[in-house]
Image (cartoon, rainbow, N blue to C red; front, side):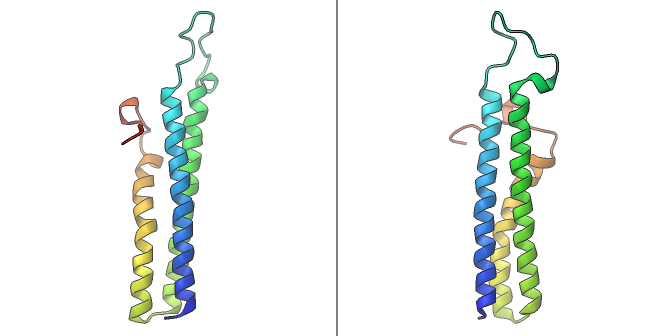
Length: 130
């Protein structure tokens, strides 16, 4: 087994760990957006003129930003694994690289519906313990 194959698998794993961290940050930002008090409900507070005046707007866009970063890391991990697989077409390296490709595929499978879906409603917002 080539050192290049092992390094590519390890690097893909590190990219998936970073992507998972970004996904957790996105879930936290969404939770903050839905847990924050809606503006305009307290006495003396004005109702926001637009969605951009609403504090939850920034949290939801931060969540989309972090999910986009996580998806980019997944794509980079798969790209590296495909390039190394093309360079080492033997069965053993391909098995290792295919196994390593399952992690970014799993993370992308979780991210894509949340990133490109119709959005998150309060009922589907991530909660602690879910």
